[in-house]
Each structure stands twice: as structure tokens, then as C-alpha cells.
Image (cartoon, rainbow, N blue to C red):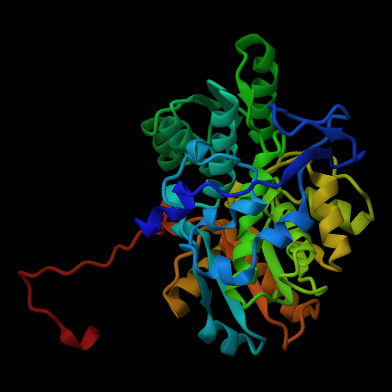
Length: 413
């Protein structure tokens, strides 16, 4: 079937090596790694001149529209190692009523809630699990605020890999149940996600599981960068003026910045780059504090709290990569309060019929704030990322009732 073509057709692979994001030291690509010898994230590098010769826009256009259409720019070498649950290209939805109301430029929402397990975490974890399968890894572990754990559980179960997952004790029940139902051993921990991460790190030597924490292995970035590849293709091989991205661990922001560089190297886009905006919650904003202070790393944010659990990450392993992308793109980091997040979620649902997750609503709140204070101009095209379906989160109760046995006052409708 042609719909399975990207999953069944062997294609040339162009991975050359892994590179320490801090020192540039090379590491072998064909064996499992966590952090570099310098203790920093590893980045996958490709023979981009080779990709340029092998892949043209016309050939790409003939392929089915799923994540695996970009195989030449992905690390999985053999189709037998692909672990897929149907990662379709996610839609880019205009918000015309909101744009008109605000008096700004075009607003486009990339809806990542259409992916398997209902969030953009599927992009990173499908790649991490596929590579783990290729390496023969039998047990994977991670800390999660919910959606990443669900994606790891689903893909690892499909691949026959055991998973152990740790989440903060206040993680929504729907996420914990989803993780457990999809085959993982999941534990609630009386702490935040970085506390869960310490348990995973300490268990690495004792249990011999593979640490799949954010940016502690190289391949989640490669999955997340497909957001940038898709976005450029959907915009006719161009980029928007500005991207608002909900930033916790920041893998997607780092991945998209990498994607745009690779697309230019193979001749698919030009020099223009979008301004990258790291969106955080006011109750957990280490990147904003570091950005505003001119620092290159972000110390731990104490007493982190926000309704947008996915961006409640007190300290990110890839902080310097997030800040580098923001600054190189001439973007910025911005924090929004929880009341603005909640109001933005309700406003977009009411005006556009689009139900965002709280983290996605944070990007809309940040856009409104940036439009009002002049950091985004009224003629710029902005892309906001809704990172998960809003149906996975608690919704406000509706208590309006009608008694069919009593006379109905139709004037109330």
C-alpha cells in the first residue's frame, strides 16, 4: 500500500556522527549514548551535501504525508527498526477571528494534538524508541509531567521494550492512567520532574535501564525537529516571522532551530529564520530569568508551580541550547501568568472553536502580551504551537440544567 511507503521503503541514510553540543567532540553514531563525555547533550550530524544530492522537493512531495517522509534527515537507518503508530503531518490552522479582534498579523496554530497519544511528545519518543530498538535496548526509563511518559509507554510497548516511568504526585490522573494502561510501570513521586529525573539517573547503574530523560539521549531532538521540517513545507518552503513555543525542556525549540539550518544546507529554504520565542509560565520561568539577565545557563527555579504542567520544568539540561536559539534568532523569552493562560484557553475555544491544552494557551497569552508591548509587530505572521489535545486536561464544569417535566421558558434561549 502506498500509504505505508515511508515505512517500508529502504532509503539512503546520511548520519555521520554525534557531536557534543558544548565542545563539538565527535561520538560514534552507531552505538547508544546518553550525554557526551562533557556531560552535555549530543546532536546528530548528517552528510548534508549527500542529502542535497539524494532528496529534492519534487521527490518529497510524492511521498505520503507522515513524519517518516523526511527519512534522509532522520537517524533510523533501517525500516525494520521503525516503530510507528501513524505519525501524520499535523495541521496548521488559521485563527482569523482572533487575529482580527487583536488587530495583528496572521496567526497560525500548529495542532500537535492530532499525533498518536495526543501530543507532540510522540515525535520525540517515536524516534528515541526506534533507535533503542535498533540498539537492542530492553528497558527504558524516564521522568515525565505526563505526555512524554504516555508516548514512551505506547511506543515502547509496541516495540516490546520494558518501561519504568516516574511522575510528580500531582500529575493529572488521565496521564498516569494512560501511561499505566499502555504498558509502563508508573510511579507517583512526591516532588517535581527534576526530582523524578534524579531517581532515573541513580537507577541507571543499579537497574541498567536506559535513561530516556529530555536531552539525555540524542534522538528526541531529531523527532521534534520534524515540527520545523513540516512547518517549512506547509508554508511553501518558507518560514514564519515568529514562532511561540511552550518551553519546559525545550527539545522542540532546539530541534526546530536545527531543522531550519539543515533545510538551508540542502537548499530547501533561504537565509531567513523565524524569531524563536520561548514561552514559560510565570510560576516556573528559569529561561526567562536567564535570558533577561544575559546568562548562558539557567539555575533551578525553586517552588515551581503552574496550571500548564508540561512547562513546569525547574531546570533544563539543554538550557544553553534554548538560550542560544532564542538569541541567534533575535527572539526572546517571555513568562505569562496562569490567569492569562486560563483566559486564553477559554477565549480561543469560544471564538475559534479550538480547544487548546494549557501549554498551547500559554503561547496565545504570550502572543497577546507581545503584541500589546510591541515585541511583535502588527504585520508579522506568527505560528503558535498547541502541543497536546485539550481533551487530556481538566475542563471547567457546566452546571446548566433543564427539567423536561416542567414548562420550558423558551425566552431564555
